[in-house]
Length: 311
Image (tube, rainbow, N blue to C red; front, side, top):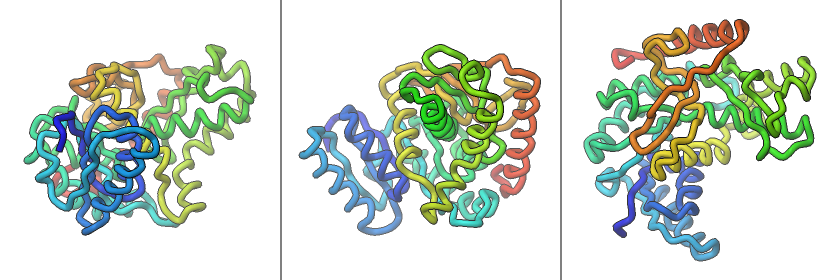
């Protein structure tokens, strides 16, 4: 392997492979793709390396069934676990994925004791709790990818609705990753103009509803979970950490009193840099938004309650 810095992606399914591909194209770090399925990570890594010859990037992507190659990774993205299938709730996944994420975390920690963990496995909020307790790491170094994806979906609908460039949409989605997410219309602008000035309340409500059910809409269409936007969203978090960008991004972070929520992983805006979460940003919320966030917290607590001893 080269002497470039290293990022590991655990789970070589669609989300993991997309994340690895986007990171390879960024061209600043080597990528290790780990999966228990023989041949799968090796094959996807080989394919991504050969894509580099076409697109002109040259990090070394290696596929492996063991964690030996991952040693010394600075960031580890965990996508392992079963995806949702149609009609399956996120709760159904809890017990199966709890075992998988717990075992993966232990192996990651043994190989890369100083890494930062980004959890992508569903149900996301609960799996962050599993990774935190399995690793024993501080909350700054264990957090989840959900808000960027939800925000990306919301931003896409806003761009279409307003006929604007998605590059000029600044949106914010808080709360649990699921039907209880809280898109914050008051903190959402298009080219600096508040969304509420551009779009009627009922149209905003429709976009908010579609965003909240965004994952489900894709599961219905594809028969499995989405992967392009989730993979790219996880890669954006890796960028902010590895390149020390201090970007303010919505992530699933462990709250200890912020937003009036204690001892729970929730989606909030955080500042992400070389040491992981450097700051939790507290937005001014309207009464309705705060109430929606509390409701979302209750829903997350319920799913976390399904966890075994590690929750």
